[in-house]
Length: 399
Image 1 (tube, rainbow, N blue to C red):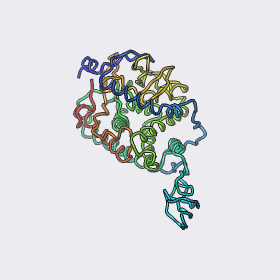
Image 2 (cartoon, rainbow, N blue to C red):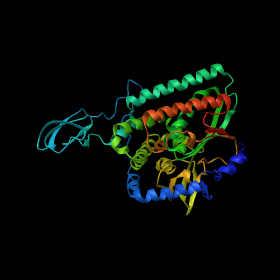
Image 3 (tube, helix red, strand yellow):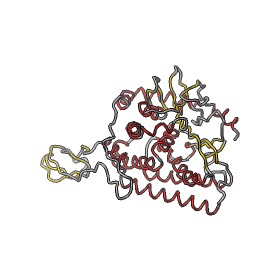
């Protein structure tokens, strides 16, 4: 695919520092905008409440190195407890002694209240604890994935010492499409590329993306690959521990949006001194009303606005720089991939919508499934380096 063909197909605006340009909406983009407006109308009050001026104070959470020996569950789930009260059923426990509905419930771990229907730890507190100190389960899975990535790269270099053989990636930009939790695929690609880059066979200058395709490169560039991997796996642990919050599509989508707002505040505050290194390196595409839906590319980040910039590319509703914004995929062309228009170098495009994984994964995380898709990303990256092609047609391309 040449650059002219790709540009005509995707029709994004010129990428400039904190500038924007009006584009004509594709049918898919129009449908996405209508959907965003409809959903926002139903839940905007809740979203605004979650995204308001409240700041999550995280500096007082002690940071621990994320090694197996030094990352206990934080905060810990209290042990099982008993409670006496009037209720017809022990929601999350077993009956001890009953008399006409009155008696004691033996609550399961993490539950309390007379009927074992009250969480001992809120999901927000649990999530913030995991961001500071990931749970052992996510650390174990991360170590397995890291070992696999290293093995794949080692085997590739042994069998193909002149990697890359079929593609020249010494000076490229990377563009990642939207795709919700399909971002696991890109994380797998990243884990392979990062282990080859020290040998100077891959050189990446800039990243651009919308929705999850913008958020993931932002996180990796700001917090590092390992912390990003651990936080996404930890969200999978959250979905296992608090299944009642993820029982349907609307609830799961809202809860992850809310959780990512906490993450946005957390990383903007904790890594405030590192934000400047993302300037002119990570470009986030967001759809803002000016007055019509317009693609705005963000490329400068300060502590006061970084959280809003991060959320604006992949949420239902977010105020950024005086504008009402929402998911950038709606105005970034039919493939949700905002190509760089300056054509300074070749562009590696990762299309997350071609993973072939269930649509439910866009808004909901299953930990095993998420880890599996990371592995798929690794394998496709290796195949692309060896042959210039992928098993899933068009999921990684070079323009």
